[in-house]
Amino acid sequence: MSDRNRVSADLAKLPDLIVSWYRENRRTLPWREEVSPYRTLLSEIMLQQTRVEAVKPYFERFLAAFPDVATLADADDELLNKRWEGLGYYSRARNLKKCAREIVDRFGGVIPSTLPELLSLPGIGPYTAGAIAAFAYGRPVAAVDGNVLRVTARITAETGDVLSPAVKAKLTDLVSSLVPADAASDFGQGLIELGALVCLPNRPPKCDVCPVRDLCQGHAKGIADQLPVRIKKTERKLDRRTVLVIRSGTRTLLHKRPARGLLAGLWEFPNYSGGFTEKEALDAVKALGFEPLRVRPLDPAKHLFTHIEWRMTGCLVLVAEPDFPLPEGYVMPETDDLLSRYAIPSAFAAYVRYLSAPLP
Ligand code: SF4
View 1 (cartoon, rainbow, N blue to C red):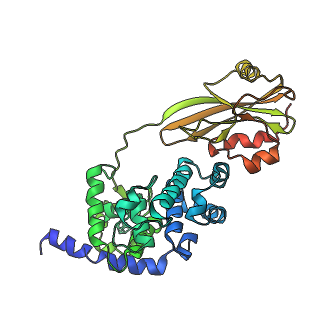
View 2 (view 1 turned 60 degrees about the vertical axis):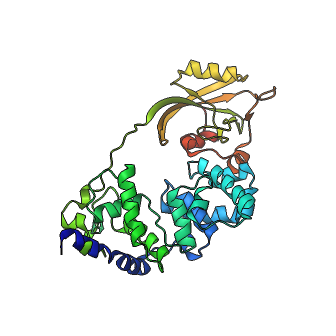
View 3 (view 1 turned 180 degrees about the vertical axis):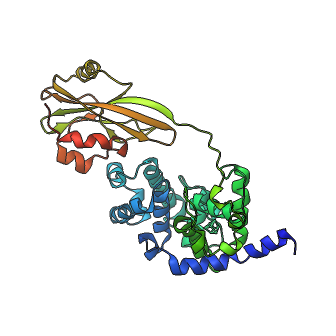
């Protein structure tokens, strides 16, 4: 048998090995205990760019507030953001609501099961569409995420750039050709689970306990820990900002961000481009109409977005009780009210602790 035919024959064994391993070793996760298209949609959107452990508590909390597609379609935006607070990448929450609305309008409230229909919905890309079709409906389609790309690149000793469309398509075609018709969900989730538990990212894979070691080309060639190859093109843009925590008694000033763009529609502490001196910070406070009484510099913080890195410095400024209407887009709630009703993105998490910090 030629090398090529032997590799194909070996790969034909992959589905059974993955499915059996997954059935014995899968983790207990909230979205796996009871499977429905809505639960799969929700969990997959939450899991984008977010670790499983971080998603777990949010999943049930979100489901309690929005138990089905119809409730999510009519969700109050403030409550939606509040239930998403801390998960980051808030555009996912907005797209989820848009998606739910389209499911109600175009599909009578029933999440569709085919890839073309799923892909026509906002916020649903090829992986999420494959996950809903395979995991929730059992359709024999591939769901290829970063875990699956890594695992399959190692199994096939793929040395091309897995971020390139050509290599992605090649590995996706391979997975698609292997999906077993009677176990599409366990195969798809099994590949992902293997990537999460055994064929680890950014660390040496645990080949000694891997169920597919005997057919893994990366392992056989001794190059598994150098795979996958990823050629990154974008660097994050550095954005220096000054964050002002402006307090009057137990009230703190918040500003609503514009409806479009980064962190759209969320609440923030007033913040400005550049690193302000104390005088510049006080000038900004006066420009908002406030009379500063005391000021204290705050520790620097940073936050990484996909394409931007915020390097923040901050000031806590105590101001006189405002006797004028607040500028448009600003509110000044009491601390308890602020924490329970206003969604503040995690980019500002380092400054939330100053809501009740003492001033000199
Ligand atoms: Fe990954 Fe090693 Fe298993 Fe190959 S043998 S799939 S490299 S863990």
